[in-house]
Length: 276
Image (cartoon, rainbow, N blue to C red):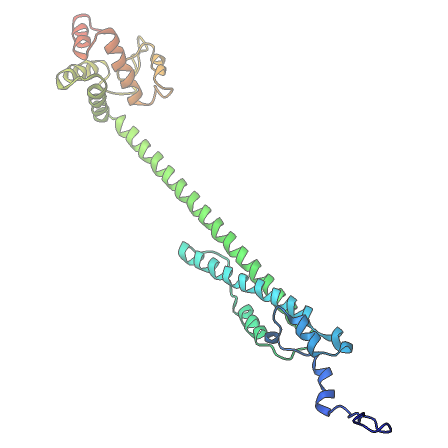
């Protein structure tokens, strides 16, 4: 036998105010509430008629923007650290990512925000991220350009110093005393001729030119410290034979070695014939 009399019907109760009021609230959620299974949670909590209002897409976009922003903040910090480590002065300012950091923190704490507000926050973070990324790239480019400029300036200064030192050494070698020192060094290092042979060489070239790299015989045209005849024979050593005492000395010692075997041999021939 049925529990209810045939004439009786189960009583239907109207939904409570609390239940009826849930549907509109379902369109507003907190970012922290929606995890990987946000659509499933929304389906369980929100009536079918309200599902199109669920801001899950906007939340996903905001989270993506936050992830990108976090990377931009981290990279900006790295670029600033690189700049300080380089210890140089650049025109570009260091990257200020504090505003973006504040936007990220604010977005992470959002609760009960509608889809439109989420989209606006996403756009704000994206715009600020682009500014930080651009500033980071500009700082790095400025640091690299400045380092390259400094390196070029240092290289130019080093080259200028080397050229000045070479010019100074050449000028010193072009003096009679400098030429004697150069000749003694080359004679010993390249030919093994010591003090005894250098004594003969000194006497020989004292007689020929007085160790003057510009000495020229008005009669024969012999030129330079070794009195090469003609002078351009010394171009076999280098093209600066007319102005460089070292070039002349190198050629003169080669000539003495090939023709007389030693400076004393050349000096003995000069004493006997008045030429060598």
